[in-house]
Length: 58
Image 1 (cartoon, rainbow, N blue to C red):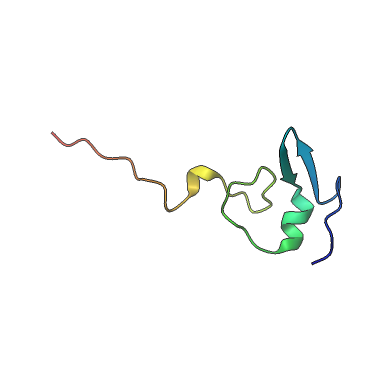
Image 2 (tube, one colour; image 1 turned 90 degrees about the horizontal axis):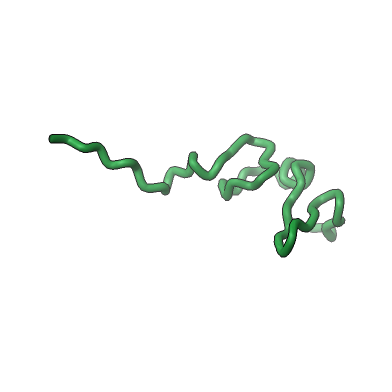
């Protein structure tokens, strides 16, 4: 994998490295981590391993 280029593939926001939509699209798959610039529109609240809300039956 070629070296990442700051400003094209990622940028820093405080202590965090944020991947750009271009980098994520070029990578070719969704990691399902809820990336800020996910080109596939995945959000953290869509995770299949998140606990389901319990229904209240009286």
